[in-house]
Image (cartoon, rainbow, N blue to C red; front, side):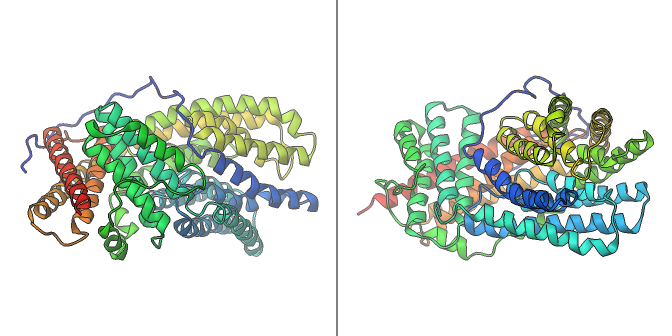
Length: 540
């Protein structure tokens, strides 16, 4: 398929939105899980340190405890690996910060180290698709540790505290497994069914993209879940029903799809469908070699460069202004970087608004927190819960709790003058957001357009393979299933790539007509494979 609209040679600047940036969304279905998990992970280490009179060590245990925020949407087999990786990554970043702090007192060197570590953390979190809260928590801990008074002899003990708290956080994250072993898979399947029902009722392009992404996410969750149990097979058949609804929305029954989704909420039996043929392609996909996450590092190089440059410049600017905690500006810059400049701008607005309101909340709460160490710990726990409970609605809303929590953590080693803390936080927020966004504009991401071209080629290859199998009288069992899911994944990747490139500055014009044709042809072929699969399953 040739390109109807070749890349133009002119650069383009996109509008920076304000409308809707602060709009509240619906909370996640499991918003309470990370909120409760982080409280359970943070409370015991902090209370033990409180009883021992060593709250000054809380920063190190917090490093491990905050790992409980991650991987709540992953099946437990995959979650165990992901959480272990997060704990090791957290301890590694903390170790780099503590060693650097013990070897030099140069703030410029420390900021430079922090910026490089932040860039590495951003690239690794995006490449592994670890999910919220991404690299921001890792960068907060590693950057703060750069400015913690330290000697080399103290580093092993402090890392041991972080590792032990991280082990506890791992147990907290895995704790629901024995009670709801298929909980993540059931939720992902229910989400796919609900999204398909919404598309069947309202066949708009946005609903179609959301539904296909939800179905693809459900397949990825099921493929990560390990061995195929009978429950998993039943869930796979429900995801097939969602695919059928996308292929033939006029014939779909949205009420039935939603009823199946509701039945998946508890721990009861997975509902059976009228179509129960075996899915031969799943075993083949499970046996195929997994894609290596490090292959995604190349395309992420511009984002990593933005992060390194923006964090370094923000830290240097904070030092030039005489702020005592340049890591606040560094972390603010690190928190901005999203898939493109437009999303980075939106995150910057959300960060500034949330932090400014957050310092007002801190000013109101600090008299209560200063009643004693126990009050300080309890206030931090409350803000931990609030941050995770609200973050899913909008980043700025969660930041209202993150900001006072971060300010209170600095007081574990001793109470400080609130007015100075507030002033420094406000200045560092504004400096970090401004400098960080300027760096995002300065470092262009020309690879965003290349990603669209690669995604287009992948869609065309996947569509051609699926069409070839459809033309065969007797395709190999499972081959059409595999081709169908490969095409669906390629279409989702193409849509994600186009949306990312569309919000990037200084970007070449996208081949919009070619994208539209590829998506239309891909979805027609995808619908044909689903209808063929359904017809084969209906044969006696």
